[in-house]
Amino acid sequence: MRGLSTSFSAIADAVTRLGALGTYLANLRDESVRARYTELLRVVAVADARKTEPAALEKLFEPADRIFAGLNADCVKSAMDRPMLV
Image (tube, rainbow, N blue to C red):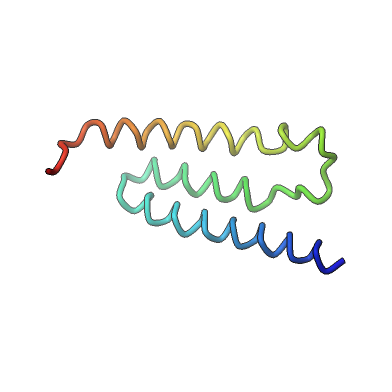
């Protein structure tokens, strides 16, 4: 059972790190982007993979995947719109 609790601890740590990174990135942008980062963290934090059958995990995280893809596309666009510093 120890390995199982270690796994949950690692997952909680990953969610915490996502929240910290999301907060940092969100603070560089406007309110609408900050709201999307908040929603991403909320969706990931409340997803209970422990109670989900393996076959249903993809569906469980589908909303988070969709939000993340949009944020990632926005991040790439934002980076491309800025001049490169040499």
